[in-house]
Image (cartoon, rainbow, N blue to C red; front, side, top):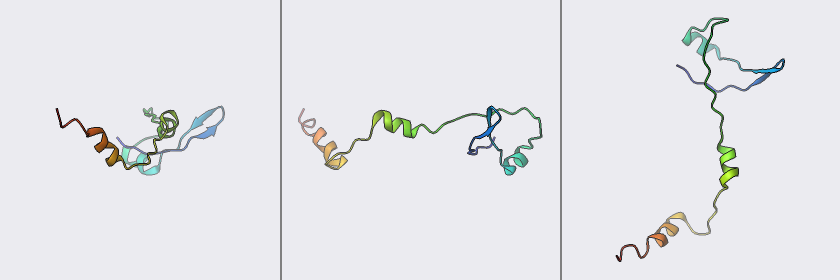
Amino acid sequence: MEQFEAITKKWGNSLGITIPSEIIKEENIKPREKITVLVLKDYSKKLKKMFGTLKLKKPTQKVMEEIDEGYDEH
């Protein structure tokens, strides 16, 4: 099993991808052979938009120390 990135291209009313020749050789893929493609999109931009990015005025370590204050007393 091989993994690669591809950019989709317009192909009539559909989209197509190009399989690199190294993958074709390594996997011995022939024309008109049925293969399975796993689609994984990069959702990092959507996650940032959904959850935003937290910008603190203090360093993260300082915030964590302030959260921990008082827990050692009990």
